Image (cartoon, rainbow, N blue to C red; front, side):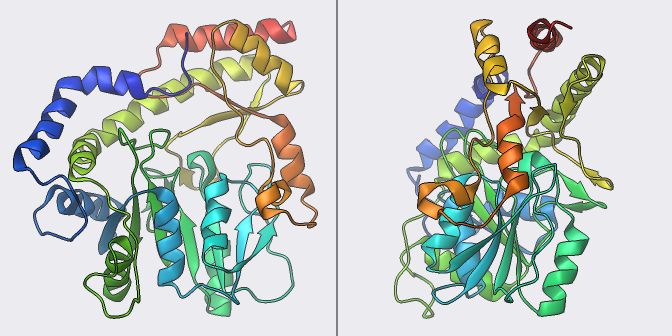
Length: 360
């Protein structure tokens, strides 16, 4: 079986070191990461990611969904606000906005699934954008729009840690940014986790209060229990030390795919000009997508669809806004297996089976 996700192989490669990191935490007897403690494993991980993304502050939380919600709250988003959101993303993006009580105004996407032209209508209170599959949106255009109208630009970087826009790292491409460390994300925890990145000390303190029952701040009437455990933080900090190596390995796999897919005349979603992608997902656009997916699965090749519906066509976010590009995108896309420890013969098999399906 060629698995879609390589988390098991990451564990196999680093198993004794991952286990050692977990045991380090267990021996301390302090596994909870609820309060900020200087020098703790959570603090070390926050410092590491802040340095990598060139941010002043990083606050680890329990999930990427909470991270985006806390980022919105830190920017004052709540009932009565309107937030722009791309029509294509994982549901957690829109869910985080809805959770604040704000109204969502969806924006259609371009051919890469990234946020497209912002419609000329009422002025929003914020723009949330998503770096889909590790590919970066047109940051200059979005920043200029937000700066012109003096509204915050919020970066959902759940899929793009390790991507760069003109040498600026993802995680720095917004007034505030959120990350996810879910097992399916570029830097995967063996559990769950997220992080908010900011350059504001006040926002950092507010998010720390939101993270754990409003402790440490008088600005909140209540908070939440959304903590990254010390155990996961210590494991993630180890993986962070290997992150450049993991990205390099994935980039080599992507090059193998690109050569073979070009020979098959199969279109894949490429990076925006002037950007470097972390190659989080390899997404192709094909005809007869569903039958191809079934054929590959019959050959023991796992694939996924990102995503089967635009956000405004989901029941929980339904909108009658027309999103022709997003609808077309969802009909054509298929994600192929890609991760640092995929082997060349597996790439060969995936591409051969695609060729066999189309008679190439």
